[in-house]
Image (cartoon, rainbow, N blue to C red):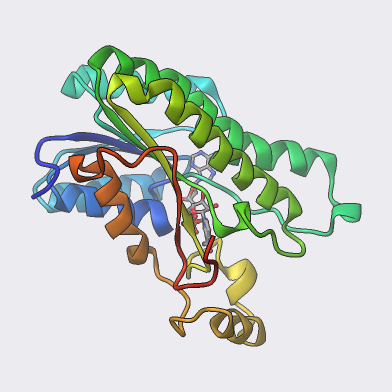
Length: 249
Ligand SMILES: NC(=O)c1ccc[n+]([C@@H]2O[C@H](COP(=O)([O-])OP(=O)(O)OC[C@H]3O[C@@H](n4cnc5c(N)ncnc54)[C@H](O)[C@@H]3O)[C@@H](O)[C@H]2O)c1
């Protein structure tokens, strides 16, 4: 086990990539604070972690609200006394052409995808600075580097996550905190359905992927776990693609 007795918070861990990462961290020895807006799926992830013999606590909440960050911080500190790992994974997709895109959708997608990362880093980052230790992995997207049609707002949120992570990593590296982003490609999840539900579109996405398949949430686990171990001690502010070869930058 590479993360024995570490304490991790994973947001949006009720399903998809967040769930796979939460289970992956637990398999490596972490106790996990599982967050989601969806109580049922979040509880289910916590149960599956407990079934692995690890500790898990579900904290329901919308990560675009600072109260959720405080709730996650307080729960982790009361139960475990420290926070070693933070994975900011929660996100939404609202797609559409820019000229038709509603202002309220722009505000919502920025609140959930980008503002939440700032709020969590602000609140949990303070704890990590006091500890002089922390690993933060923010889930961006290859859309941060190469936005697709219908996804301008989403791409903008993920570029914000990527560049926020770079700048923040420079503030906190001196305190023993590593901040990095991962950039998934086309992942077969509820969110991924926007691109992958239609067989024709799916075929096109597979053709764009040198590995010859779309990814599954479990593909995101290896890099995330690595970035949470001390083996990645000198990796700071990076935005690493996990996309089967779609992008090379
Ligand atoms: N699926 C893809 O192709 C893909 C590609 C690149 C990046 N990503 C990113 O990966 C992350 C996970 O995506 P996924 O594909 O697993 O999506 P998903 O929709 O399957 O899961 C997202 C989870 O986040 C939760 N969530 C949504 N809003 C929340 C909020 N305000 N507060 C707390 N939890 C909230 C949902 O309830 C859900 O459990 C997202 O940040 C997404 O942008 C996904």
